[in-house]
Length: 427
Image (cartoon, rainbow, N blue to C red; front, top):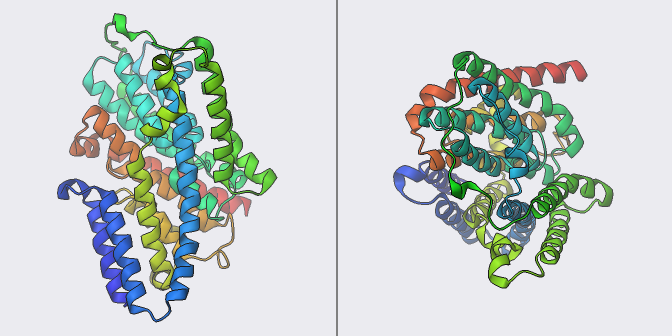
């Protein structure tokens, strides 16, 4: 049975990794994989009651992540519908490309720590179309934005889906992950920024001509500010909510979503229905990426089947016996996340190692959050942020390897060295 399960998982994983050449959406592959794995496990096992219990337990853990992501995505969508991100982007003005690169990189880094790396990439790459006229400049900036967004998302529990998974799973705590990963994540960005500043030199910013249609439509300055600051406050306060109440994070995000929904309805209550329709949370819920949500359900349930059959535990023991070094194993997982999706990688790692052996906030989990979160920047298909940038600016895969992959790799390695040195000094 175990051999059949491993073969099914490897085939499903390969289908996810080669989504674009195959022309089959990775969500379909994940759902088929999960369905086949649990079906085989149920048919070949002699204890249906135990399997039902295990599936229910896995579904509960998966649902917590899914509800959290849905709430966070809806909040971001409603802020964006109000042009809320203009509060930040309208203040970015400079005449030199190197100065603009620093500003964009740092804004993307801190913005993705509060929102998430995918949303930040979409917002910042869209902004580049308003600031830069030369396509080659926009492509280069898009590459650096991917590095910055992934680095910024890694050091907070709400910035990257893999860090969120580790946080909800009890592998890391909010305060410790922020303390432990802030400096390595910042170095992951600063090293590429220094190199790009040198390459860009004193080249000027060439801006596109302003059009009459560029002004903001449908929202006032008051509405933008209220929804932006309220939305960000809700996201930032979710870890505080979890610490104070000891309730799971999804409860905090749903509570906050209700508050934002109520405030939005009150602000727009005097408007005509057709005028306020696109600004409501009802509309925001229709715009969230449900395909990604369902993908998480499929892959997490698929990995759970391997966890319950002890396949992942055996793999962990083999890696420890073969390589013997935790830091090397985790760095290889991070490099692998440049090729395949980091969600199943982290989900598998959570099943490989137990909290009894590696307690909350141990080296393994913190370094896993860093490597899985930032390793995806090395190839443009390695992260949701990279795929989004690829779609928005039609970035060629091999152009990214030639221009950006080297920058992302040296940033990844520099941040890893900083984390290991910092951990050894403080522990």
